[in-house]
Image 1 (cartoon, rainbow, N blue to C red):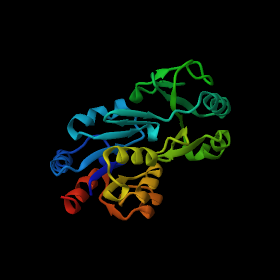
Image 2 (spheres, rainbow, N blue to C red):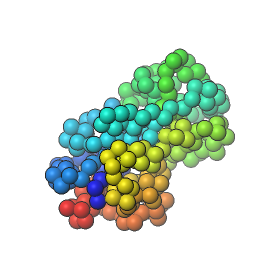
Image 3 (cartoon, rainbow, N blue to C red):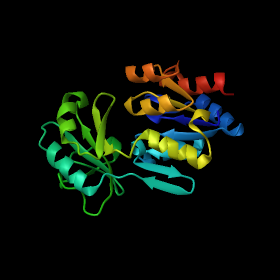
Image 4 (cartoon, rainbow, N blue to C red):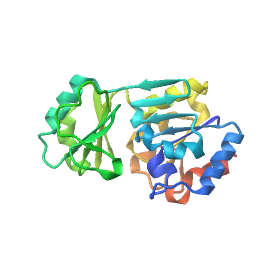
Length: 248
C-alpha cells in the first residue's frame, strides 16, 4: 500500500479526541516507509490542524469533501446559493432543529455551540451575503427528522446522518470518496494502492472503493458489512494496530 487514508472522529481519534503516542509512532514509521498519510473527515480544516503537525497529512478531505486541501491546490464543492436559501427556508419550519452552516468565514449557528466556536447568527433562513456555504448542519435527533429533511433537499444536494443525531447537507459533488479520488490522483496513486479506515455512513463508499477498506469495531453496521477487515475500536488504537500488523 502506498497511502493510508483515515477518518478522524470515531476512527483515528479516541472518544476524548486525543491521539495516543503509540498511534503517532506508527504513523511516523509510515512516513519513514514513504507511505503517504491522508485524512478524510467531516471536520473543517481548522479542526484538523491540531493533529496535522504531528501526523503530517499529505492532503486532507474536509467537510465531507466540500473542501479538499492538496499540496498545491484547493478544491471547493460548495452548495449553490439558490439551493442554500431553498433548503434553509424549508427546514427552518421544522420545530426542534438547531440550524448551522459551515462557510468560508467560519461556522454560523442559530444557537450558541461553544464546542464548535460557532458565531450566533440571527439571519436564518438567509445565508450571510456573499459567503460560500460548504455544508448545512441540523442538530437534534437526526433519525427523528430524517424524512422531513429529505423532503427539503434540492436536486443538487444530499444528506447524511452522523452518529445518529447530526444531519449534514452537502453538494452532491462533496463526498469523501470524491475527495479521496482527488487526493490519490494528485499523489499519482491508484485507489487499489490505498487502505481506508472509517466508522460512519460517509465512509462506506471509500471503504468499498479503496484497495483495502477497514472498519473500526465501533463502526455502524453498514460500515462493518462493507469492510474487508474489522480492526479494534478507535479507543483501542485500531488504526495503528492494523497498520503495524499488516503494512509495516
